[in-house]
Image (cartoon, rainbow, N blue to C red; front, side, top):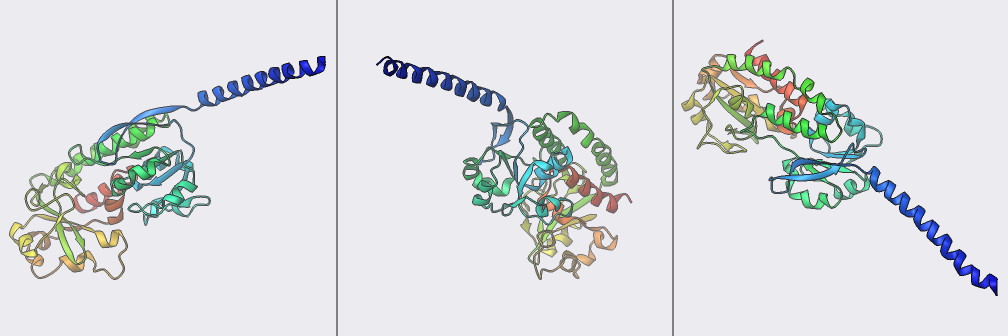
Length: 321
């Protein structure tokens, strides 16, 4: 009978000791999970404070500018899944062993994102409508460039935000070191010059203002953008070549969107632009129609560090070399 009376007591003691050990182990696990608060955008494009894991080991990428920055910071080996991209300098992240295909920068494969078990997900503006759905899987870091702040400073800001997630803030200054001098040299070449900045797509020419793609040409380099204002919008307005002739800029900068997204059977930008009307402009006569050499970079990776290098190189070859 004594043994029967002692048995519940022994069981209680064992349970108590086991629970204490479990509690200690759980507390230890929670303590080891560090987080950091960053400023990101929400699904509406508004700045918000976001708590993310510190030094994350599993990263899902659906934004090429963010992947570019992670690559430059030396933490690309944490990437477990990426959106497809035609950017040559980021191909290792698409074709590498153990890296899952997560869809495109416009349409995420939610099941694939969930399956790769990321600790954090990076997106750009094209996936803003998927922000809430992706946030159910992991914290979503949504960064973009701000034309008012400028592409260079936006890149610096976003690189600093991402670097803070890994304790690599000190690396950002060296990554951005020579851009200011390059902008200054390009600005001297652009002084007093007018330009039209546009995008060729589906056989048409869309004029771009200083509030959207390629804004660095007008905002930071300093060309007087004749298309800025009423005749343009964030993504560009289709225009007539008669207007191009009427505005008669010193330079015409052309982004070939169809080449950027590898549209099959599309007309080349040069075929669209070099028509009888445009060939009468000062820009054509003086050899100053500039076809941006890396359209995929301009169209899909603006805000990346290597992307910024390519973009400035495109302008340097036309204006300085």
